[in-house]
Amino acid sequence: MIGITSYGGYIPRLRLSRDSIAKANAWVDPGLVGYARGERAVCEVDEDSVTMAVEAARDCLAGMDRTSLDALYFSSTTMPFADRQNSSIVAEALNLPEEIVTLDISHSQRAGTSGLLAGLNATGNTGRRTLVVAADCRNAKAASVQEMLFGDGAAAMALGTEGVLAELSGFHCINRDFIDHFRGDGSKFDYYFEERWIRDEGYAKMVPDAIRGLFEKTGVSGADITHFIMPCIIRRLREGVAKGVG
Image (tube, rainbow, N blue to C red; front, side, top):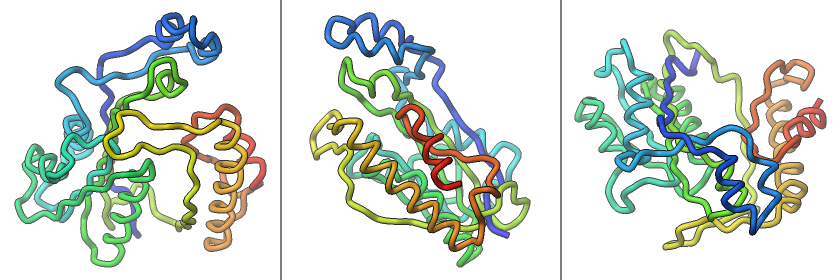
């Protein structure tokens, strides 16, 4: 059995009211009021993706023997260092063994799931006990939907073959160079395309294909699924995708 043996998380204490963002930018985009519920988590001035990763990992490793870990994978699109191994900093802050394998995974919002899958594959092939941590504190343009919805935080998962809490039953990947957004080298903010393009040509076509491929591999049908988790900021899209795959 291969899977998650422990998990932890960290969300900064600071909060920014979405209502305040909407009111401040109502003159340029009154439609932002539709996103004006609740708050978003914001890093303090002395926090970044590395510090949040450390906090999430500490939560995950509480009560565990840290010397039993063989590898640490750190995933983020907002690593503070461009040419210095950020995962090594996390490992040192956690007092992990010097011999531990460290790996940075970045340059894509798929970095978190890529790190998790790489860790699970390593565990399955070599028995390696891996800590996978993901953290992000992404900038967004003022008066954008992303400014309303982005939030800072981190999550950590320990992977192994003993004491498994959530087993990997199967996975399926598809690779298509679909451009819904991008951030060029040296740019501060992501450039986003029109939401209908992202919804209709991206999520609505690619996600069902990936799910159907997984069903075919595992022999599972949509009717067998009781919990469906799909990270997406477009409203009501998750329900549509779930219905479309049964």
